[in-house]
Image (cartoon, rainbow, N blue to C red; front, side, top):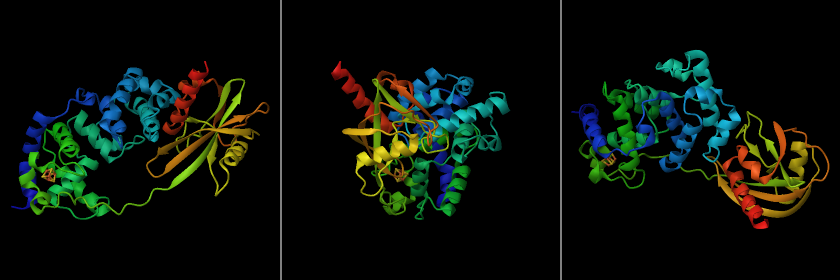
Length: 364
Ligand code: SF4
């Protein structure tokens, strides 16, 4: 019997009974609401379970239904999402909720084509909604399932290559047992998250070790073979804490830019060996048409995005006169430090805001 045939026959019942006994009790596993399951899947992309749990609870408290999310302004949605990162997920979810209300009378569709037509919904999210919410026999392939399948079958090719992806998707599809898609797909993700982990798979406790090609060959630590790691670029960014009458100037990023719709302190990337204070002065002039006097450095904080890292250097600036014009921003506002929490900021800026709050408390 081939590995594939043994897997198709034996894997689903093994993984299902292991999951029944070992599954973690997570908030999104206590519901069958397609909206709540969809939200969890959106939040869990690139983000750890422990980080997501409090955000998930806060988000549902503020937007308990898809209709409530669709009715809310995007600013409110981004404010609740602030700190979780990958803000395109929040923007897409909000746009998709509006689309579901408009086109599907507020009911999340079950059909693959209808789901794929929604903003931000790809094959993975559609598969998760169809299988976990509706128990339809739809495959899912995330990082955890990819790792488990590559090891079980002994796939040595780059898992991100399109031919491998095609092979993995068809295998995932063949494996889903009729009538048990909900639990089987979650079981495969759970197996990857807690047993078949990237660095030290616990093969001794794995319900599928006797079916696993990587375990048989002693390759479990080597598979999947990921493409060579590329160094991540780093940028220095100068920000201006522009003060006027105890208020700070903030600017809203254009909707189509990275972190679109979020607020930030004005500034930008350092050019060459330019002094950082000059970066701040130049960027604020270009972005808002405003002349500022750059003072002392307040704080430098580091932040990592998916494809690059930044160090944000925030300088106190004075600007007694002049009206900021949002040349390269969507809007500008003067706000008090205690009111900054009303605006959605990206995670790097939130680190600066925490320091500002601490400064204001010590000055009181
Ligand atoms: Fe992963 Fe080891 Fe189980 Fe194979 S036997 S699926 S490598 S945990």
